Image (cartoon, rainbow over all chains, first blue to last red; front, side):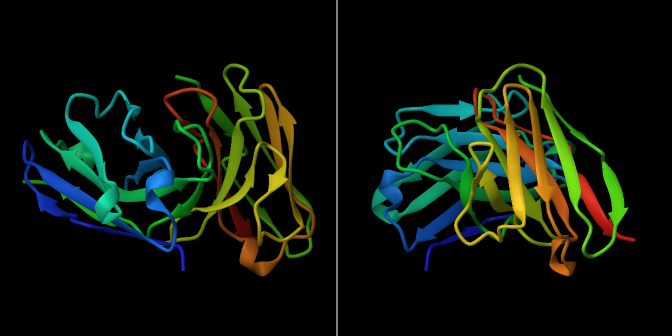
Length: 123
Length: 107
């Protein structure tokens, strides 16, 4: 079964750090670009970051640029999001999502999503 | 960034109705548009990609059309399981952007 499972969410104080993980299974992880998308409570979806299959191409939303770092370990079938200098407005459910096709750069719809992990930034 | 605007933001409909949701991009995005369905507490689900191609396993009552800046999602005969929130997303240029969502509620 094709599956993505996020972990690492929790409660953190403003200015703190957190590292999210996304474990992939059931497909050739190293062939697909991957993404992080977040959803604040009661709000819509916001794209956060994307990384190509070989990590050659990395993109960030302006709202997280300079604070968040996306990475992947193809040997471990895992995607990561290192979040630093967290703010209250970063409070959201964070989803990892797979690009639909095996292309060298992120440029596709998201066909597989994890169940999400909640990040709460509060003092 | 390209702005995606959906309309309406919400509406009520009955089972069996034909419903249409529109999505407008602030600049041309060719056919690089996807539609997702999200139910409360669940992850989004891809319904349509490339503006009009139905994702595998998605019922044929869902259809998409449009190119450039104006797009539509149509549900031909609304079923009980279709009451949800729908999002459009452009993947034409970074950063990817979603519409604000359209909530379809039971009348």
